[in-house]
Length: 288
Figure 1 (tube, rainbow, N blue to C red):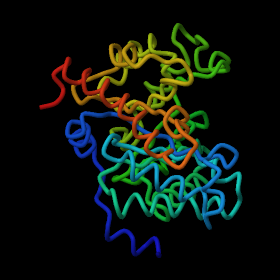
Figure 2: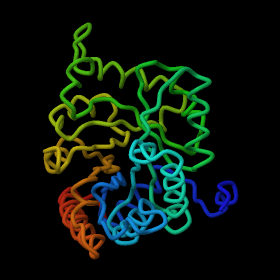
Figure 3: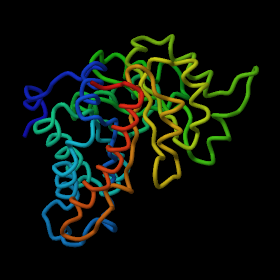
Figure 4: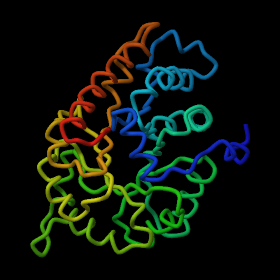
């Protein structure tokens, strides 16, 4: 189905819409759709499009427990044209059947202005994702082309969970870490209210510093579960009055099972996280 035609099905995603969905589902879960043909259930390999069928069954089984899906584009690009077709089918399926779900292209783009403009058009216009992850380290002119889209969100890499984050992000320059300087500088950019930030769950203690600079923005938090991050610690340091967190879990959920009932196993795993989130929201008086 033509992507332009699909726009008639979409709702514009706003922070208010996202918060409303979080409170309704009692969940701030984001599920990573990162398919690997060497790991998905073998019975799906006979399908015409195994990646899409895997994603579709996961989405149908877990959409009531999550408020967002994040597609890491590397897991589609690795399969060439077929992978891109699977990605487009996945985002179209989400936008038509579950338009209230927040969709993230985890593409980590970032280049000079005219190239960033084309990246933005690719993911925001052609595919109609709600958000994209972007590297901020080429500065304002590499990010603002994404922020030119008033109804979309740009998620800046700020402080990541990987060991290499110490190389640059946590270097102290003029009595302030580089990631803090990135946060402060980004608030000066056009449509900065449409910014979100990636903060790794294993950096939960640093969330206090993050919230001192961006108290009201949403944070995308990968690393809970397989990477060892603590949901409770992240929430203790990162929640705000609009919840302000999207906790991403990928491998723990999507590979919870590898038999015919894999989607049910993923649902059970997602339910475990959602239940914990509901308790945290209730404890903090953040849903009605």
